[in-house]
Image (tube, rainbow, N blue to C red; front, side, top):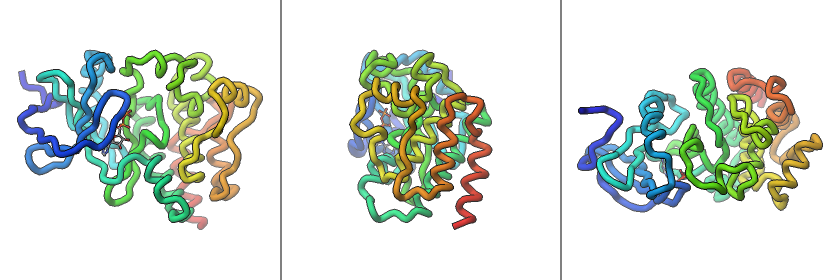
Length: 268
Ligand code: ADP
């Protein structure tokens, strides 16, 4: 039976390797001879494939100018392919690092706004990202930042990534209720968004630079937070800091943050 989220492999052309991710190699490709796409190959044993394919039907319906669009999944043979919108300027973290000293504060704020708008759409649709960070955002040819990999953390098979004491668990982006109890919500995404803003305004520094994951848990539990980046004005720092309220209900919503960030751009 024909299902529109299932893509026909004969319509896909592989052009070149773009990078490697948690699931496997990512390629630049063409779909139906015209549309440039990113093709993620899923290594055997790297993903809960059946659960993902069930969810992919819903994820295809999520569509917003600040979200990397899922076009479909190719399930005709192994490995599985996940086909998404192609983003010419690659991942946001590398983009920031490669342009250190060259990006104005207005540009940095615009990037945070882009991500906030994409996240506001997810929040409105009760969809939790679970791994928001600069490494999971991508930049297109027009230098627009879009949120990628939303919800994908649920399908990773890798103990180092799943266990909160594992080496790959994103503790530095996690709220207390996530690193203690794995209690994910749009409010835990908000915490991660505050850390993403910090990554943007440090032009791609590693949060809590030399600290280990267990040291970070200790610091956060003591009430300590990331410092104000030199490029962040006090009002900008106030916004990221508001995301790091110990209690989820004390943090803003993405709808509120979108308004706050717009007010900030109008001030400058
Ligand atoms: P993971 O599954 O670990 O999140 P990524 O999505 O980060 O893997 O993919 C690995 C790399 O492939 C990225 O750092 C980026 O360079 C490249 N890449 C992934 N998706 C795209 C895309 N849609 N457009 C352009 N490059 C991409």
